Image: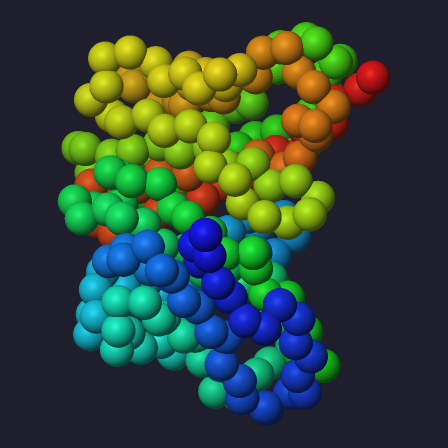
Amino acid sequence: NAGVTQTPKFQVLKTGQSMTLQCAQDMNHEYMSWYRQDPGMGLRLIHYSVGAGITDQGEVPNGYNVSRSTTEDFPLRLLSAAPSQTSVYFCASSPTSGGAGTGELFFGEGSRLTVL
Amino acid sequence: AQKITQTQPGMFVQEKEAVTLDCTYDTSDPSYGLFWYKQPSSGEMIFLIYQGSYDQQNATEGRYSLNFQKARKSANLVISASQLGDSAMYFCAVGGKGTYKYIFGTGTRLKVLA
């Protein structure tokens, strides 16, 4: 049972480099989202998607791009990494079709990103 | 807009005792859901319990129960008979049914003492 799979689990970047965090789910969930977790800040929503071709911004979208070409995949792109983007990133999906209050999130294991 | 406040950065509880983790929320959505997650030191996020805003009874899942007071906008998590394995970070979250945003609090770190 794969669930939500994130790759890579660890990554070190230099300032200005670009990279993509991959997220795939095999549960046929329409809803997918990306969070970042920083000490003392909890989890903050970066971007989310309610289906293929549909994405929207969360609380902290600056510096990140997303796309949703298939139901299964929701990659997060950092175009020019900055030290402030050092964080743990979580991808999460939900079967909810009636809004965020109707179903819990299923999380990936997280990706730890360090930007030097 | 939605907001979650968890005012207890850290809590201690003796093994086998009950503990309450506080959560207050704010949302403009008339219909919403409240969630609690556990994050052990290994880092994964584990779903614990869900409460819908129109549910008449407080949610329970094994040793977890949610003390839902709608008028006060609070959704406290009660863990009964604490175990050493309950030591973890606990996050409260709210999701409005009219939106697609789940918003999390800053978490409470619980330490269970032997």
